[in-house]
Image (cartoon, rainbow, N blue to C red; front, side, top):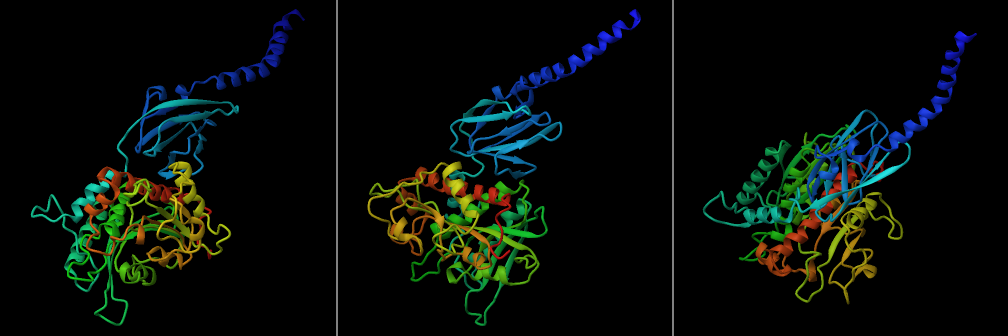
Length: 466
């Protein structure tokens, strides 16, 4: 009997020790420091510096650990955005990237443990070089609209009105096509004479494609590259605001999106003949070429860039801010929200980019939206669902896609478009200087880019006829 006593004590110790070791294990797990499980840019987060507008690598270790980011920090895993802003490790470790907006001033990351406890780590923030920037946009605008004898210093891609055999538009289209091809996109020049009168403007589009994870859906972004044809001997030459501004935005987006993984097959397009009735985008949507809009895939959303930069936060000479318009659609019923992409539109502008929601002016602006103008006529950030047409988003909205249309001041608020004064110099003058113009365009560039990244991973955004 005496020989069995040690075994009895051992069994008692094990029985008592099992629950205790579990408690101690949980306590040890909860006590793990953030520094032991999280790395930012391959270093201790307390030593890291996050730069605004830039990408940053992160690694989170330990099955069951989670990372949550604030609204103005975008979280990416496997090349795609995580709209919810939170990820959990399901294996030994998780690798991803963080993208700060250019407007971030502080970053608090939250690490959550399987036990339910959490720890917040504050990381130093410094000004960075945004992946799309107003400064770079201006440099590209200046290159495209300037004419000189040295083609390495200026492109002189002006006089881009649509017309049969216009060599200026042909030359510009080849240049834009080369930009997309140089980034690795499958790119095509699409030429269609889709009417019975050969003297009418034809369609000449630049279509760049990026393959998605899914074979069942398609989505896109675009801007028209043609300018209004001359109505006099002076004519419209640069078309700086309408729509070299949107054209250059697509060139910048192409580079920013090239390394991302998209859910649906994605087209990045430069349309022609927008000024003559959306003929370019309609030709892409209705023809059956190999690189046209596929008929066997669900068209989920489209984002349009037209006449941007002369908008909030820039100010008029009278001190009022220029209006900023961003409209989602289709707006089937003006009294209710019709499409899920409106949630993305609202979240990007007011939660992520932190624009002022209820900023107004005394009096009203000179022009506005279709259905809601009476209630929005003095609103600076005019961001909501609407039926407004007059640009290429209408082509895709008519096919059931959810759409977003970006537009700055127009008509009475900025009447230079469709005129000889639609120049980059005039844009600079109207907003009070180059720096102000760069600030204004950078905001809308980030709005549209983030809308695309988030909409791409928002599964509720479907064709309204799906």
